[in-house]
Length: 291
Image 1 (spheres, one colour):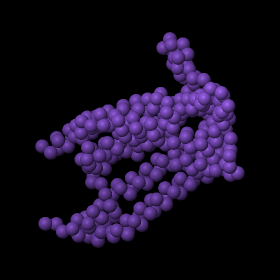
Image 2 (tube, one colour):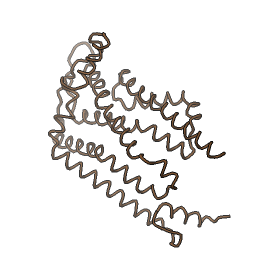
Image 3 (cartoon, rainbow, N blue to C red):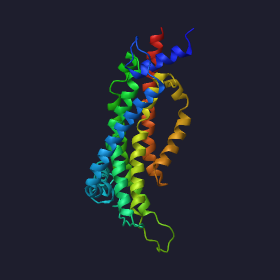
Image 4 (cartoon, helix red, strand yellow):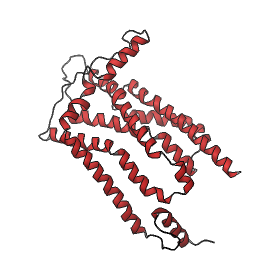
């Protein structure tokens, strides 16, 4: 029987990617040191984009952050054109969001600029951060696992940015339009003037939330490769997944508007079925290899 010590040495050899049959496996602290440098390089890349965005924060704020509150925002025109194409008149046209922002703290504008730079830097550096994580994991994979994982960084980044764009261009206008138009009471004594930091937090939550949610197919594919989930299992628990997707949709969207939650739930359901197809393919391949 192979001893636990031998197993640990073999594991560390796969993780390090440097040890050969003649060398002693790296120690646990060597791997921690290796991981530390991957994290440091990821932080440096993130800080690079943070500084870059902060230098041009005025342009980012005017042209990106405030864009969903302007009449010429692409989504408003696209929805109207789509409505006319379906011969539904202005059924899908949304009124322009009119919001007067305010700053309620002394350092409010500076804090908002820092938040924009930090979140923007995280989004911009996402592919590099994933690449650094991949470099740390890659030595532990077998040649077959490396073959199956080709293009993983591309697909992870593509799905993340697709989700982020979905949250920015489609979900954000619906959410802010609903919240800005929602009234409380009939006396009309409430002035809708949200804090700019609250608006930025809501917008970034939508973008990051959708970006991470769109990683569902990759997550299910990896879990299927490991053997934790199968296509059959995902189909069996579809009802529970539907409830979970509705809960996630409610968490991602800051408004109680069912339209916004519906807009999130539909693509997540679509991604869930893609996950079923991917997991089923892996399941069939594993069964074939076992013969």
